[in-house]
View (tube, rainbow, N blue to C red):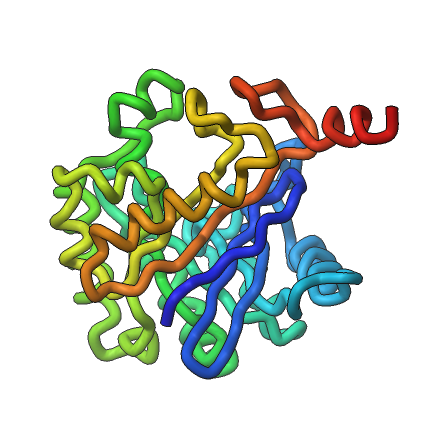
Length: 270
């Protein structure tokens, strides 16, 4: 299994995946709305149906990537995205939040509850499990400089991977490939190699928009994307590389030579 990508614009980044016999295109989806209120089943269902019905898409957007398995503002209830995915036949790349915590007990509890409640209707839709997301980046010099928030070092991620494997050794989720998602330059940092060795697949987040000092105008986005992807492949060994986030902002501040698409469009329209 490996991931490919489609460069699209929008507030939500694109998560895409491809398996030997199936292609998965999808969007990342957080647990809350823009105002930080919790998303519920109807909200996730609306997202998934909208994605599946996109006109002019390069393929069917039949997957979603989640960052947590816990329903927002609950203790350990399964996120209602699970039920929405079942009802809309949406595949899931699940995630366990790993930064700013010393355990993943609540994530494990939520997953166990989901397996017991939904059974194979749920587990058959799970295409991968990511233990953490950009934790290594947030813990890096660059992440600290960009005020990215609290991260986690490789030792913490490795411990959580072990915890997950032990918790689901005799569970239907045991067959699901385990990975970790991080930025391309985190993967090429040799101090993080132990994480590469521990996972089944490598998830890479790539945003050419933020490649300052490298000619990061939109006309060079494809070249910058390919360069980052190839660099990640170069350190992955035999591990498949999945592109878990990419895209180009529609609005917001300029970043070196990069401008959001709303400004690019204004230039084109005069």
